[in-house]
Image 1 (cartoon, rainbow, N blue to C red):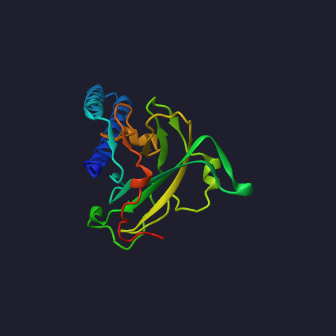
Image 2 (tube, one colour; image 1 turned 180 degrees about the vertical axis):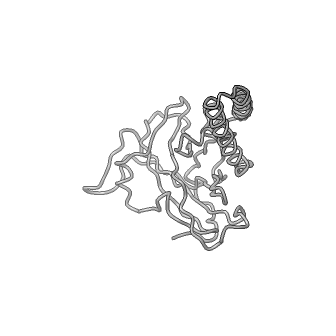
Image 3 (cartoon, rainbow, N blue to C red; image 1 turned 90 degrees about the horizontal axis):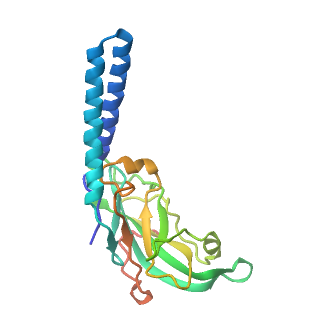
Length: 241
């Protein structure tokens, strides 16, 4: 399964046009009050209520109609960058009590889970007007682990510092067709049950978009963790070494 955001440019345009319409309605209300045109004020208020109500109802309905998903190892979750898409997948997971050596070593309170997340710039998703040789710097992402009890775990700073092999940062620029892998360390309790990875946008404003995963009513799409033996799929072409 591949999870791709539907109608992303249309959703953004709907949000912007709704905001513009509400701003114009506010200007009309202020102008009507200053000039004492009550009819203008009433029409502007009714228009604003209809516009906000229609958008809000569609926003709520899209969230209620969504369902929680768990992507299998190797399956991709796409994020919209307006004129192109980035695809993410989990390619490997390792467990260890201790990471690093000597002064840089770190011992987990439970177990360190080292997850390898692959970022791929899908060249088939580029808009016609976007140059194909211009690098893209990905928007910030939030990555957490969520267990069967809905407890959330952030990346372990001590575990990250102890990694012996550096990996690409999630904001590393890339051009169409390129990919890179980022290793993220989590310190999970030894009795943790069914942990999954949740990758989202950290910007709360995006939750106002219709159908966006950040919306409070919208269900999330998680990544299942692969077994170590299953953690070596083929690299997409154009991998950044």
